[in-house]
Length: 119
Image (tube, rainbow, N blue to C red; front, side):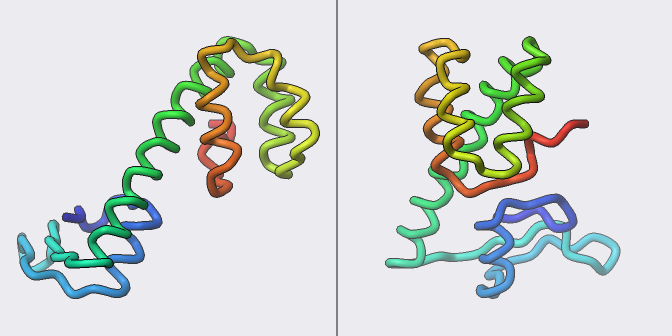
């Protein structure tokens, strides 16, 4: 199920490009909600990718909260994250609490995104 006109995940965008909806909710002549059916391997793969996106989003939120509370670390991390400087990112790990280490792993091993950009 995908809400039309909202920022969507890479998975949702791919599903919209490659699959036809089985149902749409249309308001004033335009679809606002599309429902897709994903069977077999396509459904299994989509579910796996959706779980990975959820893990990435949760990890990003936790890391972002910590960075917001530590402006100097935020600037250093953001600079290294944007350039994907693995050595610099690893050197910053000890400055994060132990409970955030798994989140850092998920974030750093996942696809790069611009969602840590300054707002």
